[in-house]
Length: 402
Ligand SMILES: Cc1cc2nc3c(=O)[nH]c(=O)nc-3n(C[C@H](O)[C@H](O)[C@H](O)COP(=O)(O)OP(=O)(O)OC[C@H]3O[C@@H](n4cnc5c(N)ncnc54)[C@H](O)[C@@H]3O)c2cc1C
Image 1: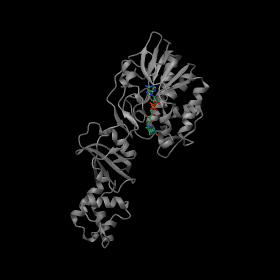
Image 2 (image 1 turned 90 degrees about the vertical axis):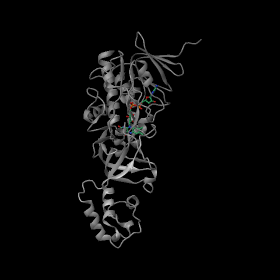
Image 3 (image 1 turned 120 degrees about the vertical axis):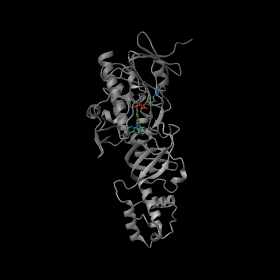
Image 4 (image 1 turned 135 degrees about the vertical axis):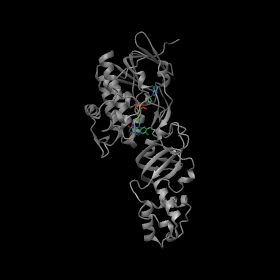
């Protein structure tokens, strides 16, 4: 029998995504020999798809209060991440909302500088290595791939991400080394509409509004921004950010205020009635809302588009006013990770040492990125945590462990 192929390095990193590549670049710069073990045929595949190919890699507001999960002592300041990228040769700039992008506006330049840093410092990428088992040994760790290949290292960084847009994950590896995993749910994802017929005629429209996510009549969360109507889903940044609050809701409803801040909507509609009295109701919202949205509101209020505006009664005006304030769509919890940008849940940060990314349960094991039960809103917060925690894990490993 031939012995399995054995690879060896100071540091093994499982996962060649945002966190794993940054960890590899930092550990290799720190003088360690590094192996990145990646299940896919190449590293950084998800990274290339981020920010619609532009890679929204951080946010000027990436501070602990922006996150769900305990990031204290595990979050790099935005300026420090920018400095790290500058060191790698990547220039970045914020947009007016504070979202940070590479100046090139191209995710591939982020991947390029990381891979160049790996190559320059001698870190190796082993692709097609789907890690199935990770064991603690006397010398460190032994990782076995599905195809039987083995890799040995003195320290191990788990940077395996989540099932969102990925075929592989590392939860079994974390469990095998003593960790638990909190329940996993799709996060930052569109909200499936319980009655897709309510979205008829709206597909492709974007609407700026204030959206409230309710469970029955209980408010779960409220945000301002933009939603995007799709065939059977309500999407867009606003819907993505609200999606995490669906957890446990029994009768979730998305309610859109189309005129946030407007005080007397009935008065506004009565003034429009005087202005457009001789027009058909189809034109009632002309100059205020997109035509299709106006038609959809009329349909909800049971008003024929051919009815005269002047003939609308008090109750019909009140019904339209209340729809403008709260245009309701019963929604459901997403059933799969398709379309999700990340997983809610993961290895709890409480299983890490205080202010650290090192496991409290297994000496020499570090965990970073989305594998941890940490998530942030849209806008660069999740890549920021992935890159930053990968960097901090590697710094800690280099200075305190080996
Ligand atoms: C379409 C899309 C767009 C996004 N856009 C943004 C954005 O613009 N800004 C933002 O902040 N966030 C964005 N995100 C979220 C962001 O991509 C993730 O938060 C981030 O990639 C997490 O980094 P990570 O290193 O933890 O995991 P990943 O980037 O997922 O990397 C994990 C890697 O580990 C590998 N792996 C897993 N298990 C194994 C195993 N057992 N053996 C070997 N290899 C394994 C995987 O193949 C993968 O390459 C987006 C996500 C998606 C899906």
